[in-house]
Length: 323
Image (cartoon, rainbow, N blue to C red; front, side, top):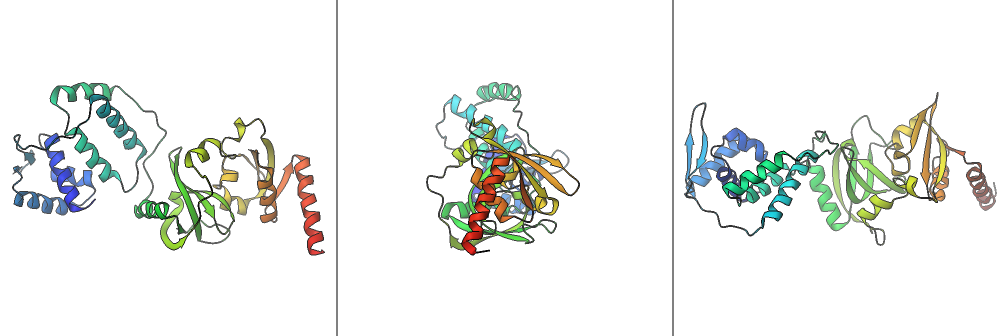
């Protein structure tokens, strides 16, 4: 949010409340108090009729006669958008809270007194049971970088926190297809170059991110909505053609791939030196390829016919390379 946008949003915040403090404005727009003081000086120079009172009951007040040109919304549209505000407040989009607060202040400035009371009464009687929690993301530039990457199909290089690696590496080059919020957690849906496979990567595992100049080609007809509703990993249990596969995964490898799409939705049982992961899939070849790629760390246990299919592929491989 630039300064001009913030100044307009401050006017709307003052119009919405009888009195508001610099500390409250600082929290709403995610800037320090000194920035708010400079903003108030700027508004004063623009002859915006704002009064300032000091002391315990102090704060800023906008004189009642100040007029802001209206935007045309009907009652139903306003109520629908205010419900969205309640949902957004629960989900928490890191780095975008100030923009959301500014947008809703603009909306609330359009509501008359009686209509506002009616809406507030209904609003307080609606509970959205969204499984969420406060975001653990500290670096808000991650979402800004992903926005740029998604717009132009740029590859991104992500650097993991010190205790996280993928195949021994502390970074990864990803083709970001989209962003997913599920069960209180933000993910990048994309393609991992080092693993040559789709990836579902927790954004809170990322320490830093760099947008590369290299672009990638989005899979033909890719749709995030289709991915979420029909991907073979998440919703395979609903597919009558799905097959249950049991994998034996060594513990070191499991810690690196547990958030990948092909593992994440499985049922996991810990063994002495491994994890047994049971997944459902309509794409058997994905797991056969997986067993080849991670042959030292993944073994197909069941069903036997899938093990046999893996062996057949292994025989072909041996003949090809005359082993």
